[in-house]
Image 1 (cartoon, rainbow, N blue to C red):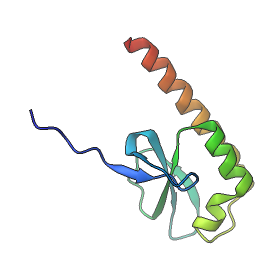
Image 2 (image 1 turned 135 degrees about the vertical axis):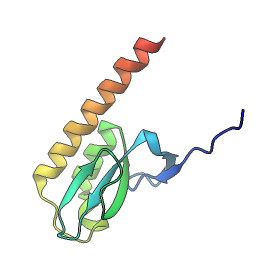
Image 3 (image 1 turned 30 degrees about the horizontal axis):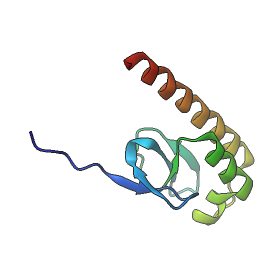
Image 4 (image 1 turned 120 degrees about the vertical axis):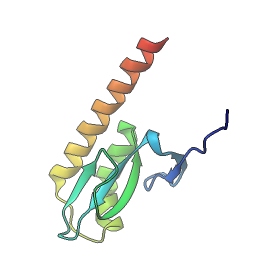
Length: 100
């Protein structure tokens, strides 16, 4: 069996490389709307962040996406991002416990 290559992406908050499945894509479309892209297929400029609540809160505190996308990002987006990451982290923990 041939071993498959694992796609790696850089977390813009920590600067560390991680497998793409451990990150979530944030996208800015041509109308400068910033949103979470759970499928990873929306068109626009993308950036990745780890599925870790502490890192999401750090991005919120430092307003990382304002700098990356060179636009003013609404504070509600950061709240939604923290909630989304928290939810995904809880799901991952639940399903990993189910496998063992």
